[in-house]
Length: 282
Image (cartoon, rainbow, N blue to C red; front, side):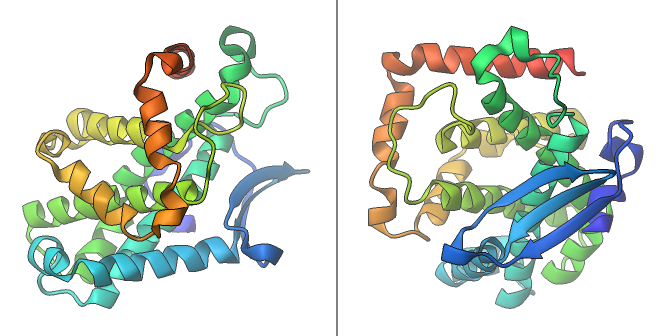
């Protein structure tokens, strides 16, 4: 994880002075899958529960098992199912730890928040989206330009530059879909409160896709045809199939609410909040 967070250089921290970081994988009761970052004295701690790591491993393997033709023909014809699953696991793990790390880099943990007055009660949710975006940019840099590229090439057994980049992007999109669906599964709330700590998962998915698309255009100089050619729909469907119907009972209702006029005020506040946070912090 140290390489994953640091080997892309100064852009890893945005120039922010950080305390020494420690990562802890912790055992918990009741199978709680969660991750968190906090500061204690002169140290920072990124904590992930063992159930979350185990869930990532289980879902990565199941995704490969349920889609063998796709994995063989479009992702990595020469790789084994275990090797593809290992990369999906690493990408999920990296996204979650980078999200938590981004809270520290983006100074979301400070007592006096510069943007609190301007953003108001939507601050927590905009910070979560901001951490998603910074974490996504950080991870795409790692897998395309850092040490993650070599790992992906080894595990996927791909040396051709264009083919490798296609497979890395596909695996990354699949991984974030799986991770967001895992956080969404079982949640029954339909309408959302702007003062809640986390945005609705469909909103996080929507913004995550936009962040990936922006990175491809602005940094990776890659095609974004996957935004409109049905790829995202297929990837979301593959991730959603990992969960039983009873754990997705509220999904249609929440997506309908987010598309309705009733959610317009909520979406506008979140949109203005994230725009303010990212433009004023640039």
